[in-house]
Image (cartoon, rainbow, N blue to C red; front, top):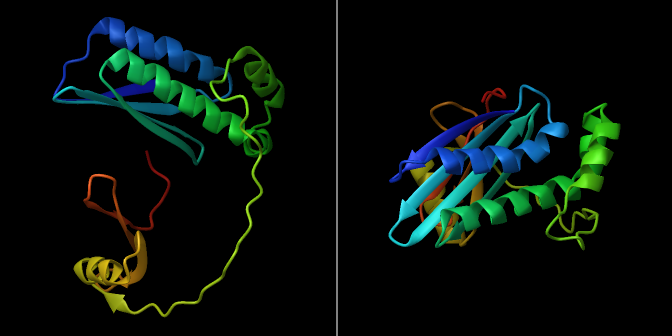
Length: 182
């Protein structure tokens, strides 16, 4: 697993990087050698946020935790990632032929939340919506008028389907179609 560090308002020390590599090393048993993990550390006032995104063959795991101490945030975010892996065990077994390595990893790893149950996904409602070409700004305005968290539209510039959404910090995000690139 290749680890890429992104530092925002902080210079990471080698002992922190060693800690992250040791913690993420537990996951290397189930991921391929081409797996990339992005570790983003942001410091704002007394808050230290650690975000980990792991990309492997089209599967993306992402977790983010904010704590007063950077090491505490790493511990918590790794536990969340571990829970996500456990929750999606069935999908990973189908995706990867190395189910034996995965099972031994599951047996060896101490997950923070042992009570995670397999979820059944039930579509409660299907809704057909007309999609008309509009700019990103118009889509954000329409989303706000509907008081939704996201809004799908056809981008007038590219003629592609896109999605705008509200982010935690109050800003907006834009999802556009594209190839699976790191």
